[in-house]
Amino acid sequence: MRNSLRSHGGLVSHLSILIIATFSTHLLRQVFAIPRTCNLFQGSWVSDNSSKSNNIPLVYDSSQCPFINPLFDCAKHGRPDRGYLRYRWQPSACNLPKFDGKVFLEKLRGKTIVIVGDSISFNQQESLTCLLHAAVGPNSKITTGTMGPYNSNYFQEYGVTIAEFYTRFLAQITTEKIGRVLKLHLINDYGNVWKDADVLIFNTGFWWDVNGNQKGWDFIQDGENNPIVRDMDRTLAFRKALTTWAKWVDSGVLNFAKTKVFYQGFYPDHYRPSEWGRPELKDCAKETEPMSGSTYPAGPPPRLSIVEQVLSSIKSPVQFLNVTTLSQLRKDGHPGRYSDAGNGFVDCTHWCLAGIPDTWSSIIFAYLTLDENMA
Image (cartoon, rainbow, N blue to C red; front, side):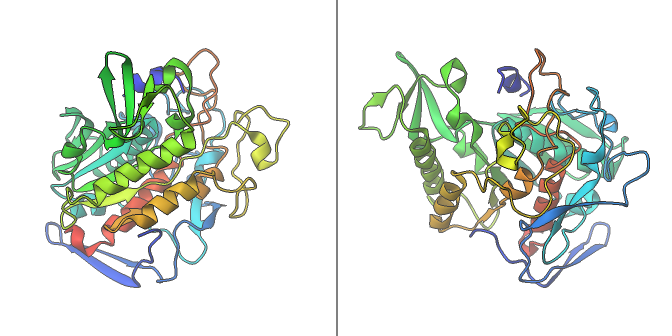
């Protein structure tokens, strides 16, 4: 991942059979029928024949959304195929409710959603903002800028803020005489700000394997009384930092009557084509179709099991949005060469917008609009 990226800035639950959410402001009523046995994260990608014949996305056209980072705007940067926009996620035992931006904004009226994580969080924030922008129309007043430590988009009519807080590790990095020290035993200093959000969506993953100057720290420490070292096993470091985050969630700092907390999977990349049976390729650049079926040949990323183990230890209500497999199946969804990263860089980490993050947003929409306590 390039330096330019920074400058831009219990477990799967069973949903109730029928929940009716009524919104007094516009007397909106949204009804979803989802079986209790439905797992929104198990399924496959199917061709959506309801797409318009001119190949624009089902929900928004990237050229009409002013919030997309140039790194993610694949159409603007010349991606010739649009087939990747014509697939929808189909859970095995039910249907994923279609994203309805006005219902979302009514349900979250006056609330703040904060997405905490690395540059994939920008993907998520911009997806959600574009979906909502398409719903309210180009004349709606949306303020873009910073809100304290956040990059934010504020929908004035509804009082809804969609914000992103950039952090690679969730753990704290302190600047000391010897250099930058990643402290696995401390939550990021801004944890005291995160707690004021109404919805928190966390992730961390990519940066735990980066080496050299780009990794973001010079030394690492696990425990105040333990020595500061130059490096350690990164998988162990990931587990320790995620455990620190889990303890913070359970520490009582969050008011769970007000704040809903999500942890969003382990985001895959597609730099190893042998994982999906195409060893003759170098990366994802030539991929234009998703995997068929519901399983990824290489299986889940090894650290996904760490995420599951740590989340299962949390006593507080944290929802696991396990989008890992459905994202693994979309080897065709990355910018590849079609971004402004430059220098021939092939991006198989981030995702085109419009694209796969819109499905992540639809799943978040399903959970939040079906939550009777979000009124």
